[in-house]
Length: 202
Image (tube, rainbow, N blue to C red; front, top):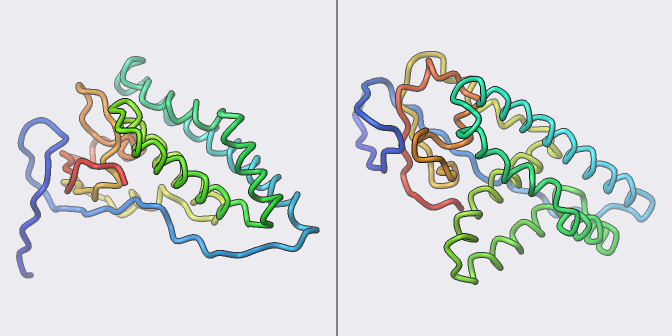
């Protein structure tokens, strides 16, 4: 087996030895597809159902994080939940579906990228910090709408490993628990440490 050198930024304290598992958690490619006028409201209902399901899933992850690391550390999920409760954003996605007859996943992707570009253009450190949260929410919702399971990323980790994530997985984390929020659903016994190839969210 040939050796490969991976350079990155450690997001876990200390030193660990184990097989490297490279994961890529990025926005999926969403095909551009329009739906007949008769299907528009169905797409709006799909959007609302997906948001509801993702909110429930994130709430479950937060509860597990509270048990594992405490209430303070689990607050990382609050920003995700607040975004999923943003009525103005969700109304704009629904309006895009109705006006352009787009699928729910395409409309959500379009609006998420629009917000991302707007936040990035402000130069605000606070908004740039929120880009990672926006990325995480968008990926979860779009994956759900496309019937893809983001949790499948972690099913391949069956032994203690060093997880190396691309920049899209380098989500905002509290200082005392240096692992991306995506790692919260992977058993701590199987992740010895984590590193990011880059410290940028998208």
